[in-house]
Figure 1 (cartoon, rainbow, N blue to C red):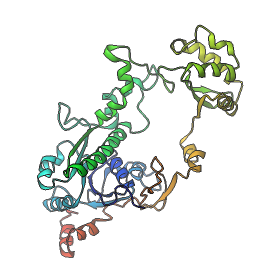
Figure 2 (figure 1 turned 180 degrees about the vertical axis):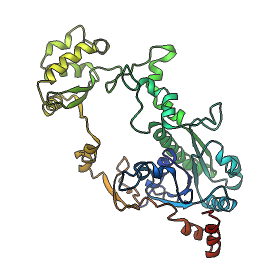
Figure 3 (figure 1 turned 120 degrees about the vertical axis):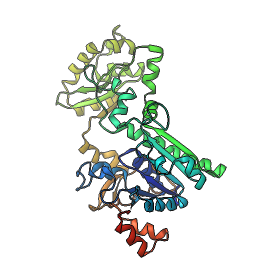
Figure 4 (figure 1 turned 60 degrees about the vertical axis):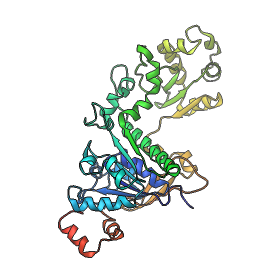
Length: 393
């Protein structure tokens, strides 16, 4: 089937997570993604760990369906190859250190002169201007700057997200930004510049606490795995030592919860718990009642009662559980992708499309496609040998 981005070529000066996650999603939709890496070592994320059959877990996740081209961008010959490549490309994505692309002559202003149809997406910690422009930015640092740590964790201790949430947020907005720029180019015939910062991306995801604490109001408290402002909404232990997650959204559900799950219908009108504000203020008292009831049942029985009452619930799964999740398995959401270590299982991208299948091609070895790409650009054996001799590729 024809994919939405078939025929689109993306060149990416990328490392770590944010830019590779953006470009992998473009590849999922059919784009040809040429990943520019350092000769020999490649993207430093290749060395984060060796957990996936000897490959790095982060790298495997965000780099399938790409071609790897090695270039030493400190050498003029390599920069000339990159510029030739951009002349044929539709999109450039980069998350190099602040100012690095500009110093190499690949700022949007200069690229626009040479390649007016090119879409350029810069991903950085804080954006291309402002007082924080040159400040180093890693995922945990941005979680701190965006206020995420202030609302995540327990009352006693803030906690970071267990995944690279700031990188992921930036990668998602870069991905949608590139798609929007390609649509805009269809209308105007011209490329454009997308400037995505990790701070602004995660700041957008902080919209609820920002408005909850509007004009200096008290911010939502850190509440562990429970909801900060709705109760009961969170994890509760059961009699078999397991944990069940549940969530109530309205007063109708609260009444059903009391009647069919706790088997205490009178609790629904208890003045301490008659609305969410009162339940939230009296969490400890209500938690004691819930835990007493749940402590007499195992997790399976608790979930059965919640299901019967149509109260939202979930298992507290381990990572191993997710690989075997019955819903993902039944919908066929796992596929096999190639890699330098052999076939690996991969979760298909979210969203089932009737018109096309996602591209699920191999994860490349460092420089696997360098010679083929150079020949495509018109470089012959002698020139390729010379570039290899000076370690420009």
